[in-house]
Image (cartoon, rainbow, N blue to C red; front, top):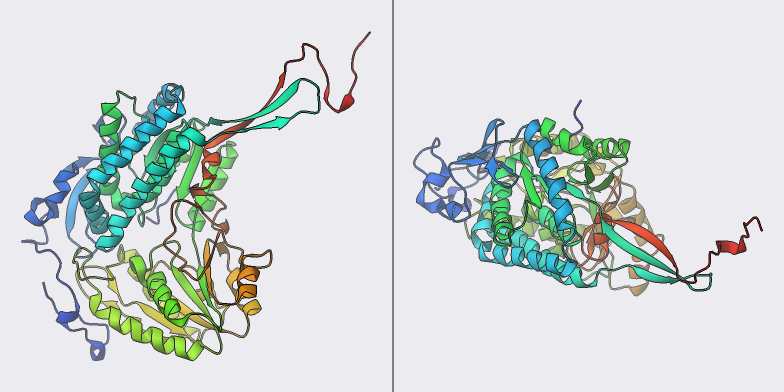
Length: 549
């Protein structure tokens, strides 16, 4: 079995129960098309796609030139269910060719001085700025996230390019004192070679940017396989990069090969790919990690998150509501850092549920097509997300949970669900412990900060977490050795919406990988310890004497 698998106008909308019919005025209009069989790219409203090189028919392989000999897939707008454009996927053979080309490009690129490499990354960032608006709209259209979030995702790519350009002049090893006279110990960080990046549908532009900007700056070449359902974002992003590479007369140091499971399998299992950065589910990530380890390759795993927001009894309540709203509903619950559990001190529990429900009621009329400027909550990405949403709610109710708000699929041509709040479940219910990529949050009542921290830590994943408290002792307890066991441990802010300056990643079943800022660049390098003897005499360490005289 393959180790690779991606977790991957005004109409009257009715809930499954007629008593909860959602009026047409509550649902925003999508961009009109003549027929469901029309391609959006052929309509004037979507001319912006052509500004970033998207056509009706697109190749999904770039290795210095555009090609593709695999199956043709059609990208779908999750907001309407309509076709956007077609992409010809790559084959196993084309992935093999891309690996070969990437290895050869590395040989030249690694010899370029790091600050010069950094300037190329700066140019990529500038080109992303140039096309931020149409590229961000494509991200929104193909993923289902609202306009500002699509723009924000491309901004992440721009930001990491700025960061990488500066990094190119300052990333370094160190000089270490030697115990031997006239010796010095140096530490150097050198590139690995070809880095493979497998990204998920929910951040199809930014995650590649995090990896590519840092990997390229440190002297590696990069081969990307994006999620099949967001292939247009991959194609458009790579066209922007290719323009910069061509302008600088560079070999294809960044390549793309879209494809199915067999294409991903080829990337993961090939020993010429020195590092595989995989973003996706815990189950698939486990298999990827094992497969790469079999060949003693390196791996960065960015997997699932079952993130908790803890509300202490002295929390700033207005901030809590605002953080919970974005944390639970932003990107329609499809961020790996989405707030999936709210653990509330018992003194605030009833108030929080009541006021959060009121906030959700204000949000419901703002559910709509992701490109409508009035939309706050777009669709989920696919029918698979709908099925997972329905299954989780059914299981929660069966286990005794109460639906405080939502719980229904919104019947339409797109993939829409009601943002949902579930209460009255035990903290260790199986459905609570399982990540569901949909806008569902479980509200849990805790007696103390110690209990809340224990519940935060009891799930398999360890990506993001947050506490709202005005108690300095509890804040330091939260970030201390017996506090949150996650990679992201926030105080008085959301679980989601990380900046690029810090290292991004998590512990336990989240995989342990780190991307983006801080010293995450070290994962794209091999460390070398160098002992330099300038004494003219051979001397052994630890006073060892070994001679025959």
